[in-house]
Length: 159
Image (cartoon, rainbow, N blue to C red; front, side, top):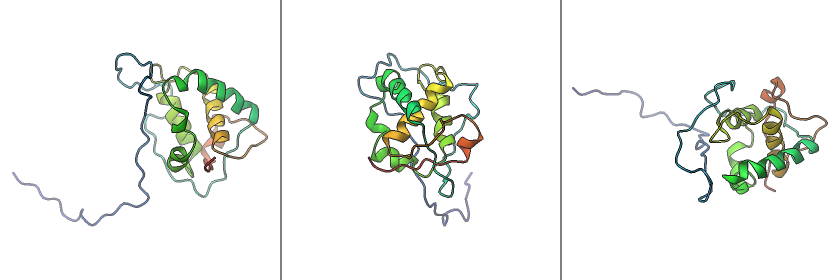
């Protein structure tokens, strides 16, 4: 049996970005390979990174970013190099994307051995730390997992 597909060859995608990969340090203490698990209590299983160029930029509260730096160093840095999230790679992957897309991805997949096991203030603190490290603006309020997050974009630039 021969099947033919007609009319599909002319479609050209624009503004397509590679998906974010989970790049671990070579010496990450992960032990035996474990299938990636998703936190069933997270609000979404699939993250669609949509462009959010028209949204206002998300800001962070400095004390929340300090807390997030400590969480990152204690939890995230055991597997991830900070350069994956601070600098050019993060800016290219996440600038002008909804903050909620990044939060959902991190909340539902990290830490890799126990997704969703951190407290909300720890996940939000890590986001605030990454915003600070990538030169986002400060604001009067801490990040919260509410509708405000869906209506703001990540607006960062190279440190």
